[in-house]
Amino acid sequence: MTAVTSCWGFSGYIGTMNHIAVSGQNTNTDTNTNELYAPLPVEIRHKLEKHEQTKTVASGTRLISQGVLPACLFIINSGSVEVSVPSCGKSITVAVAGSGKVFGLHALVSGELPRVNVTSLEECAITLIPKEKFAEILQSNPQIYLAIAKVLSQDLRIADDLLRRIPRGAGPGRRFNGHKVN
Image 1 (cartoon, rainbow, N blue to C red):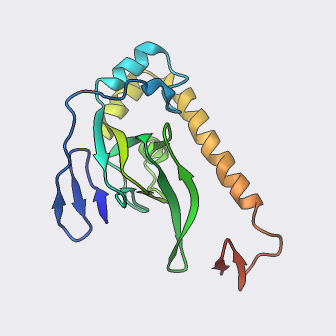
Image 2 (cartoon, helix red, strand yellow):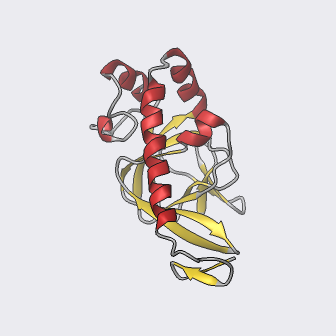
């Protein structure tokens, strides 16, 4: 499995280097379809687009790792990713997401470490925006916060829906989605 450790390259968890070409320009011709850009005014989208890097990642690439502050904001352009949480020594899938989904937003805005892992399930085209550039644009364009609130509210709704699907009385020794609950 490889992991994104910076916006500029990838490294394996055991230190092997895998080079993935970076496009010099944005090749996502319809970036306003992602959940963050959709509600933003065109001029702010253009500011963000100036700092985008587009990459293709292989199946099994870890984009976000629990407990590790991401170096970039990730936008899925094509392909699908698994969102999972570690529990009792296993990984539990909580969602599968595809084109238009944005990852790393909560961590970049709050400074809190991610509580999930995001891993590509197939070859994916992704757009990256370095956290420093995103922070600069955010600071000078506070109207982005409304778009961020919408994305994070949607993520919260998804988490709430997932929790509501846990059977009543689920406790230690019981099972949810095939996994033992401790």
